[in-house]
Image (cartoon, rainbow over all chains, first blue to last red; front, side):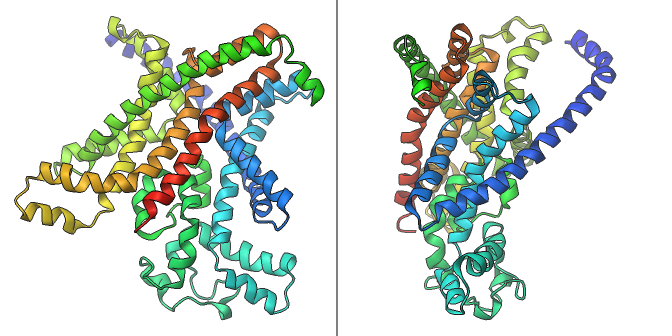
Length: 229
Length: 225
């Protein structure tokens, strides 16, 4: 035991710079994979809610397969498998791509839950104002509000930040109270269907928060970093 | 695609058998680690909500530490680093190390799940049980825990899915399971793509029912609340 620690202290100054440099690489890979996951995840999420059935199925297959197999296997397929087929990556690229497409499956579900947490009326209202679904309605009603929804939903939108404030159905002061939705509250109705999706990607550690008020306290980035667990 | 499938020719029969056997080891590994994680998680959760300060401080430390460290690092500690301490009993097989590592890591995770499940219940439940003359231990085991179970089952199922995938990491310390087998087959046949894709199929077949169960339980347990 003593011998072990003596050796340890002797080694420490030697290995510390090496580990420090390697930690930088860890951060780089994390950020790279995060960027891939957040972008690709958006594509997956939009495909998931697309009116075109084939697109929906492809996205569903993607999420299901990527979440149903270990990340390690995916990395091995990308790094060793693809090089066998003549497509060679350097290890770092393979790691970023592998973790990125793995993360996209989880992030996509988070986005989707966020988008679906927005009341349908938001889209309907946007369309009735003459917006086209793609450019305006999706963009504003979904992508804009989704930040608030996918992140701490219990905080609600602070007034003045939502793009469609004038259409806001929320009661004033809701964001302050941050209380659990009451029965009959419009939130309670449109949040409920998203619980399974959110819980699936949620770390179970938030079970209580979920049980009490539905969506999680964690931001999408945290969820992506913890791999949805 | 056809060309790709043709690559399996002459291997598929052997591989299916070998990988099925290895899958059983993976399932066994997962099950053992799951039981260990549940046991550790329950104990740590109870320590965490204990009013005895050192106990809850220890639990907090345990949870914070083991949730902040990758499973792979824990596995390396148990398998490679601990034997360096020089005690005979610390030299364990890679399989035992895998069970311990996943269990210890999962324990920290499940402790938080259990704690949040317990704390999701209204305080009045505990107070009512105590006012009926139950001892705190009895109130815990007859009133609180059964109700908490319902909150906690869906995240636990999700944890099981995650655990199944985490077992793949144990191949790195050479624990005999599916991923290690796939690596062996890949290097002996020089067909890594084929071997790993087949391994992915095996993992998917195992995790699919679990994922569906998790979805079902979320709906089922969410009812009436």
